Image (cartoon, rainbow, N blue to C red):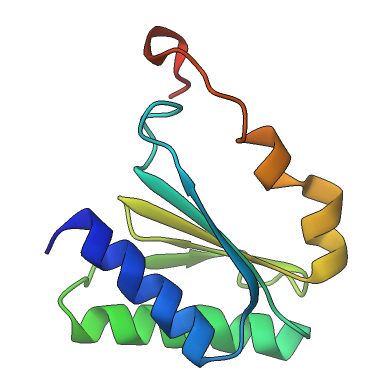
Length: 115
């Protein structure tokens, strides 16, 4: 499966399950950790947990068995690592506090890309 197909599937799964403010950041010229970072907000700690678990479950159905959830004990943030796409699911206040969109918005020369 192509990385853009994975990214599109993730965005659709999040949207179908009522995630808010879904944003995708292309990391190809910024970092070697992944090709895309998707950031979304949930409405409550239960919603964050449900979104992360549904996402992993749905990705397994399309053949991505190696996804994992970080932040299982957190009520304000979850990370789903699919290797090529990293998904951050935040409580809105934490999302605003960390402001990953701003941090990753600057273009970085490839030779200076972070690992």
